[in-house]
Image (cartoon, rainbow, N blue to C red; front, side, top):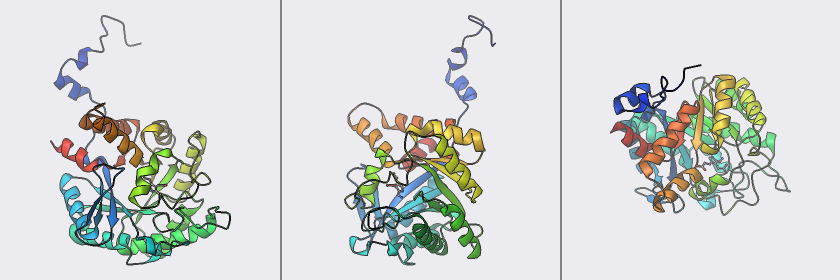
Length: 331
Ligand code: PBG
């Protein structure tokens, strides 16, 4: 028992700004942010994305500028996603293995521009490269094949690591891929390349604008429910995380973010490992829609939601608001 009214007045410590600062349990800093960026072809190109107001695809040269900007803001890591030209997409997504694909060119440009001052995290999954928009190889019936896909993901990971990626982030949800990729990285001399596993990734309705951004929305037939998790489940999220940790993941991700804070908390309390959240495209778009509708203030919504992830136990958050949030936090 902590006593009773009037001896206990919880409003006492809230009465002034200095006291609120002193009692604040969770502090958000730019170092908590990972900035997802979309890469497109050409040079000097910025393509705004209609369903993600304020977010653009950038050509490789401009991506390098974004990276410098991020480093100057104190953002420690970028996450890259390519918008592959339609003619380079194929049934088997083989462009993912091309050492000169958009992703690899962007990694090299960022490393040339920024060196060790910023980390580069790369998405491993085939959806930006397949003509059917699924994250893996499909059979005649359209079922995404597990083991055959893992073989390609290994090649994709090695390709990204060779280009200089610091963190490999498999988002495909195939079984067994973390261990397979870890082994391949060790064998290829990439012992210090990290793996951040999209461990608990749900089959969510919040990914729509992202699929516009990487150009897979119109191609995708059906859904991803045979590999991404059922939003109704939480025990399974802990099993996914446990397996990925046993297979060698350095950190794990929960995705989407805000509707899954309970999962973040459970993962953190159960395993005590670095947990990241992905505040996904639909969550970003909802905030922007609320702002446009006059239903909320952007700055306050952004900082409150990002702080909530930290309070729930996250080490960091992937968010399209990263640069904006860092600017706010830097004052
Ligand atoms: C694909 C991938 C997706 C996202 C990140 N990697 C979409 C999907 O699974 O369909 C979504 C991110 C977002 O919505 O911001 N492997």
